[in-house]
Amino acid sequence: MNRPGFRGTGMQRASQRKMNKPMNKKRQKGSKPVIDEIEVAGKNLRDEALKYMKVRNYTKALGLYDQETLISSKISSINDAKSEMKPCSYRKKQIRALEMNNNDQNALVARSRCFLQLGEPAKALQDAETALVLDKNNIRAIYQKAEALYYLGQFEHSLMFFHRGLRLRPELASFRLGVQKTQEAIENTIGNNTKNQPQKKPVKADKPKTAKRGQLSREELEKRASRRLLGDLFIDKEYLENLLKHPDLRKADTNTEGVSEYAKDAINFLNNRQEFWRQQKPCTSLNAKKISGANGMLPRWL
Image (cartoon, rainbow, N blue to C red; front, side):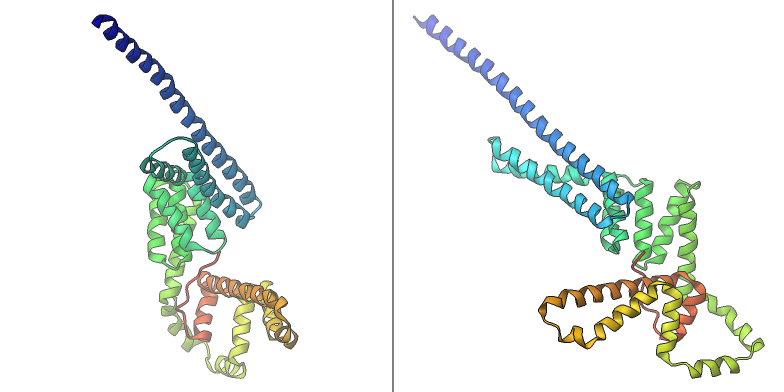
């Protein structure tokens, strides 16, 4: 009587093992399609974002890169809600989904480029540094970090990373050009180009120049410098400035508040662009320092 009972419990244990094995396999198989779904969704968004980058629609591309992060977290949360998991493992799964997205170096570099084109070099620098944590020799990430530092006005650090990229890939002309433009920006900021100016001033008569400058007002000099730096965009800037001064726009109702805000944003963009080109062009940067008397602003826009 004891043996059959003992045998029965053994059979029950064996049957339980058989039942447990397929369930474990199902769980393992069930988690794999979700990971594949995350990867496919992320790849589709990255491919679509690259298409927008090719046509220079960086705002749309940046939105798609942001959607990639949101979709990754949403899909992981839906999968965790379906499967019976402990709260601790649920949280780990969410973090893993986000980490999976941040481990994509190509996406980080592409998003960094979008931020740079949209005039947000600080965010571009953050993505480039994240990509370099994953791979310190990622040549595209090094270039993006150098460019972001350049637009932030950190010319010395930018020059260091341009040199680092040039050592790794000396055949790339982009790093040589980066070294050249960064050195010029440093010289313009420090004012090393003014060392040769005192020798030329005694030879060329200063009196006619000072007489001409005395006839022009400060506003006219600033307009000339702005026209020289912005080119055709100076007409747009002047139009927007006059638009903000228009009395009809000031007395308008609340429905037109967006117009003035857009105009102010556009003027700020053009001012930042003008300041950037002031650092880029040696011949105009020296004149700009004499006109404005303040060279503390740093270039922020491409």
